[in-house]
Length: 197
Image (tube, rainbow, N blue to C red; front, side, top):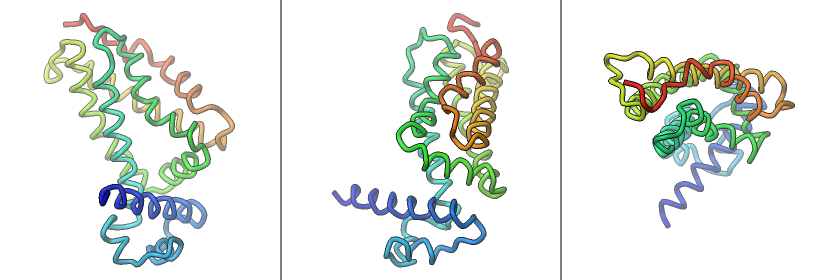
């Protein structure tokens, strides 16, 4: 029960932060404004987040954990490109469930240099974990064979390009469709084959 309450408070603070950061801009928004929007104290905010930047980083961390868990859970005989696409649905499903929020968060991350830097840092961490998962699926040694690392990196870069396109279209295109297009372009590069090695 206590954990559920913590999660609700964290979500409420994150929701207020995202709205204010998106509406006012990253530099113009203060932690005091965020806590005032939800009627909480700065001390409460500090129990959940270290900074306003940490709100976004926390959201990215959670999404990355789900992404890697989804990739790891894909059937062993599923083609690599399909498994990667299904794993990336962790992100695209957020655009279906709450497109306005996903658009705000994505624009904020892509258009705010400190947040983009943190996003790329997280993406590098996801790539490392995805590399291990892909290598295991394909029976490859990631210390010897570059293919798993290249496949993970290319898939994440294709996703980022699709996300940029979706944000630039102001969400008028389907994120799912744009991601499908981007991954179709790189399909041969990310297909490792489960019988490789």
